[in-house]
Image 1 (cartoon, helix red, strand yellow):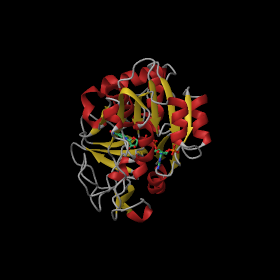
Image 2 (cartoon, rainbow, N blue to C red; image 1 turned 30 degrees about the vertical axis):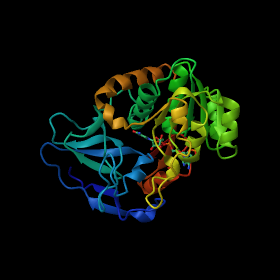
Image 3 (spheres, protein in one colour; image 1 turned 60 degrees about the vertical axis):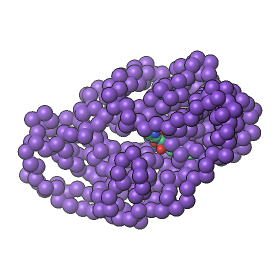
Length: 338
Ligand SMILES: NC(=O)c1ccc[n+]([C@@H]2O[C@H](COP(=O)([O-])OP(=O)(O)OC[C@H]3O[C@@H](n4cnc5c(N)ncnc54)[C@H](OP(=O)(O)O)[C@@H]3O)[C@@H](O)[C@H]2O)c1
């Protein structure tokens, strides 16, 4: 490139013990270096935000190493190639990968993920949610572990979030009776009116225990849990026999290191109800991503799955985008437009 390109980026300054905020990151500016052979430069258009990113800041055993102090904050992103010395990638190609919280990223083509190039007919942000790890988490978590059957009662916590709202819509497509737990009337109304849920529980204004007893006493066949804590305990006492509890995440813990989340008090219900509780990590299903994305695409194209994005504008908003997930500030998939 002839004109020097300036990159702005967020790097990790320190590890939060409790809630994450801007003070844990440094905002830096640098001149982008020249390309070397076999590389290309991506101008990032959108970054994806998920609760797991808070967990990646903890220096603990996990499914991937923690973000190192001084490194660009890890994040999935999508963008367009603006310069290339790579034979397989040309200027104008649209790509996705773990580009991090920055405006420009180098790549040699490895680690572009879940698919290397974004097809022309796909909205550029969709690989960050419905055709990316969010949609795939919903798909594999519900279908592989939840194993829903037509007529089953499926209860979902974090139901209005990016993952939860996809789980609920797939469960409806499977012929299930779907109950969502979410925070606030607006989100709950959306689940009922637009996504076709059969019932909702507003955990911020209602007793989850009481509402679960009223709506699905001893009849939950699948509990898809994004939240953990007290909501998981309420679900455990309302399982049917041979129920499946899908442990997708535990956002109520804030993924903090200062205090461990409470253990489930009612876990003996799994014995009494001959039931099954299983965690999973979406990254374990890479070889099945293409088929799953194809199925998700069919559902979206046919209007059977609706997608909602919650957009913040500007790279400056990255820390706020992450912190906001733990306060329910996002209504739909949290993205930052760069
Ligand atoms: N296992 C895997 O491979 C995998 C992969 C991706 C994501 N996940 C997990 O999936 C879950 C959803 O992630 P996402 O990216 O789709 O985020 P999201 O659901 O779009 O956003 C997080 C939502 O969590 C809810 N929330 C926040 N604090 C809460 C609390 N204390 N109690 C109850 N609800 C709370 C908020 O909704 P309300 O306004 O309704 O409170 C917020 O909007 C997370 O637990 C994440 O870690 C797992």
